[in-house]
Picture (cartoon, rainbow, N blue to C red):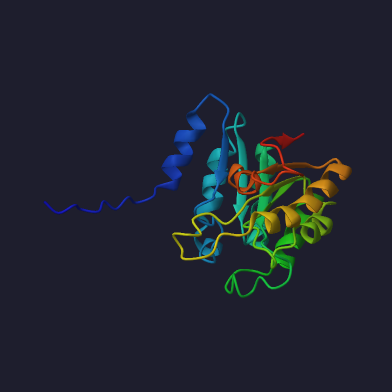
Length: 215
């Protein structure tokens, strides 16, 4: 018998209503697997409708993650209604990222959008991942963003082998990451190092990061 692939049609509005009805507080990320602000969102406003539904669920923390935060600025009014919505962006590198993300807005425009959101009173976060030495320079990124980003996340390239790519060298990863963490610690900023990145550098004897978040 041949296996049949089952196509699942996403229903984001239904999912948003389901989460809004949940009483137990959750952290809802929109989203890691897709970008909630593609160019079509400017016309269809589907993500905006999702946020409007979740705005009625103050028990949840809503973490928006996009490579197009400039378009997300249109929805700041909805984010203010909730009070617990964070606007975040992904940045791999400040320079040289165009080859990796040819169709995405520039890293500088993403950071400028986060600055504007922060000035409007919306909490902001930045996902510095995947860290790809020597293209990625996390210290440069956090120095640029530290005054207007409230929370930082660091991660590595996952599924490198499945994609036919070499695994980053653990020493290169740690040498890139450590100065950024030290800088954020001195500035009293919150950050999270993802478990996959921690495991990648766990074999190093000195300077090993801990599997915890700084608060």
